[in-house]
View 1: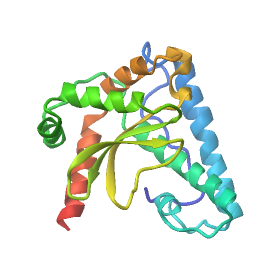
View 2: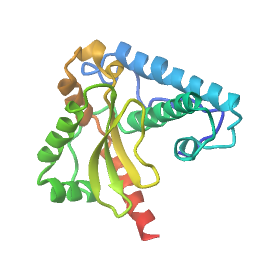
View 3: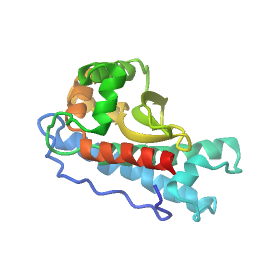
View 4: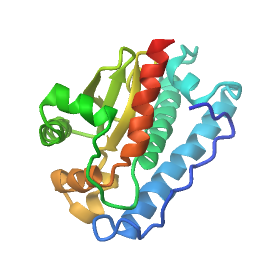
Amino acid sequence: MSQRYPFQAMTLGFGLSSLSPYCDPDTLYLHHGQYYGQKVRDLNHLVSKHRLTNLTLEELITQDISLPRSQLARLKGAAGAVYNHELYFDGIQSTISTPPLNQLTGVLIGVYGSMNAFKRLLLEAAESLPGAGWVWLVAERSGGPHIVITDNNETVDLQAVQPIFVADLWEHAYFLDDQFNKEKYLDYWFSFLDWKKAEARFESSREKTAC
């Protein structure tokens, strides 16, 4: 992601009530407008404070930055939170759909046996995370997809893999709707995935490999 300071919160591609009844407007407002919006403000404050306004969002995550450990952790945490939320919100749409047959799903079927088997393993990976974090589908630079989980607001290794999509496993993403029922939340999240964008990211990983 090539945006630079001052970072702007991305606009949702759909209205706050568009995911109802699976995700109510209050949950989506708190998640996008409040939590994610605050992380963008935090990141701008830290980037300005440490005079890092020349760096892109991805560079803030991937580069070695000389700061005291506690300050570096705050900066990396804020940058990771913004990056992860933007991929999360950009990766869903307002209409329920089933995965189409395309290059990405064809590869997933080849690796996991079926889309149902892939979904089951993805949800199992998410359930295995005891606290806050994220579950990702990523593609190696060689093009092979696999499932990854990260803690808190950590990202995957952006220099080694291409993120395809990600699910937010922090309770603020679903608690008002589903309480502790993470499985229910993940099931509807999967049904709202934007497979066209996922396919584009997967194709991008293959183009980078070809170069």
